[in-house]
Image (cartoon, rainbow, N blue to C red):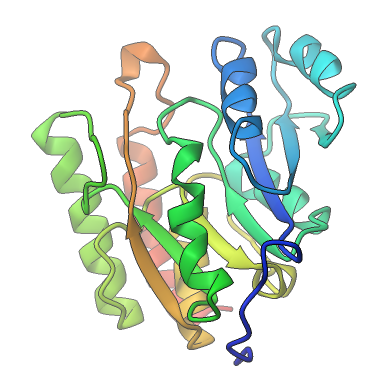
Length: 240
């Protein structure tokens, strides 16, 4: 799959911000407000993945605001399923994934979009290890885990990414519309990476800011997801 290297003007750009949501009552309104404050033409797609806290009530309120679409799963199906639902409803010509937990700063969007709108990239990864303005210091074990998964992914895909597990992945809409995601949880990250690598798309990395959470602050990923990611890296090297 090869796209023509055509730039996208500011007038033509419509950014679809896809936000998977699961029990994010503490941060949901704040992240939506931060996304709204970015001076870009955009739509916000919130996918509630079966939340059991006050998140559905907050979404009912947000849904009444212009430029916001709320989609709902009747039960928790995982981040991969939420992304698949969001991608299917994207109307923009560029799609960005945004987590709802305030770890990533939407004001990095212009930098992430630049290689695509200039016609040089089809996909952009926002790297937490190429520090832009700030990055919260975390446990060394977390750092090693992320770097190991990225290294292993690079071995199987032939890419030279510094941060495969990043939330910030930006795509020309044609890329995600043709992407049949099968992963249901956080192993969707290596799946998406493997699939864009197989298509030999033009992939760029851009440094982003990062204010990561600890587990006691509500972070949902665990060591089990690490093993699942390893399996996904191997599996999607050979399976479409």
